[in-house]
Amino acid sequence: MNNTGKRPKCLDMKNSLYISLVLLMLGLTASAGFAQESCFADYKAKRVSPTDGALELHYGVVRVEILTCGDATGLSDNIAARIAADDWTLLRILSTFSQDKLEARRADAAEYFLRY
Image 1 (tube, one colour):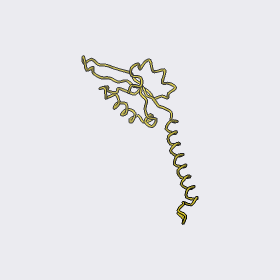
Image 2 (cartoon, rainbow, N blue to C red):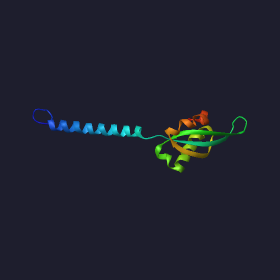
Image 3 (cartoon, rainbow, N blue to C red):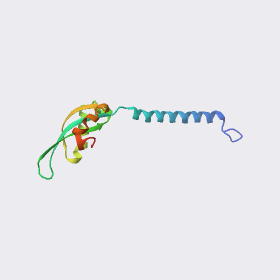
Image 4 (spheres, rainbow, N blue to C red):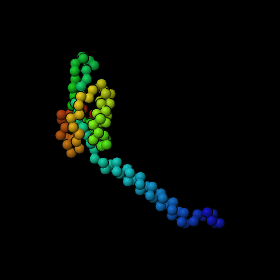
């Protein structure tokens, strides 16, 4: 501050520039998250029916984090934990694929299409 009690203009400009840069970086970070392509996996799972003890099987499709998509162990652990909420056990992951191949699997997965 100077003798008049006002801030020098150079400080106001520096603060404005700093705030603008921070907002720009936040905007770029947010848009980078939206720009990432989605990754999906299809899998087979089993469980013992809670009502009659019969073996149940299902085929499902899930959305997975793009970083997990190429990591077989991380992908298996992720899907296994998600389906375990309904007592399903992961048998195997069949494949990973991008959104352009998603719709072709909708009918086969039925109620397990993007359920977990």
